[in-house]
Image (cartoon, rainbow, N blue to C red; front, side, top):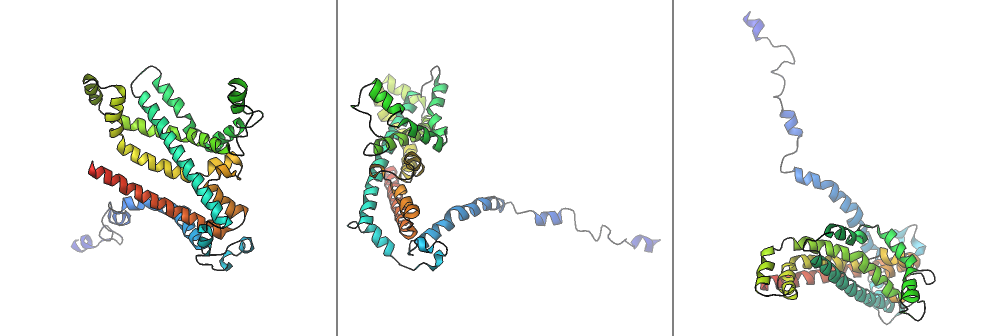
Length: 326
């Protein structure tokens, strides 16, 4: 009887591993779970941004033209030749790139400044509760919510010379112009591009600044009003200093978006911007995909990346030093 009790059937409980042991081995550790969740994003970032960036840098050192499109690896190695051509401002290519750079700088400064100004004014005016404030805020965010292509194509129709809404209002109704100007060609194209850019970007500034205003205690405004401070003094002494952290990030983001903006001029002018609105992004596109000089276009892209990195680093150092002094 004892021998029978001591015998265990094969595959019994003694041969099985403890419950949960195999599952616990397959289950990732708690500390590794956040890193595993980041793997898909890192893979997409590698495929979408990092690998094309490295390929673009390699292409900038090659004489890659339309003759080597099939096998761009066989394109001759030029070293820094494309960069020398791009920064030779006395030659045609360098002079055109320099002109495009100054146009982009002027466009970026005006667009970011006007977008920030309109966003700040709208955020301050809608800070206090009033009837219909929610509806007005929703209307302000419409340009930001619209798809970029649909919005810019609509503006392109509005800027038409003969039957566009802009000329109809300015010339036919308000009589502010002597004739019907061309908005999509010639010197007026810069104004048209700036108008569309500000119209699209200022709601984002309004959204960020509205969120920042919610963190300012109302007691500060009440105390300032009791001390006799007017609305401009309250904005200058309370609102703007309190919004400094938000403005630091907002201005940097708007600068990078506007300086790199490609969709707006491409859709507005059809891929061939006039000289008055020849932004760097469009200039690089024309050099690469219109003139079929991918090596030169890649070199210009790398120079643009270095410039933006330099400006961003200088801006962060300057703002951090200002915060430290404050």
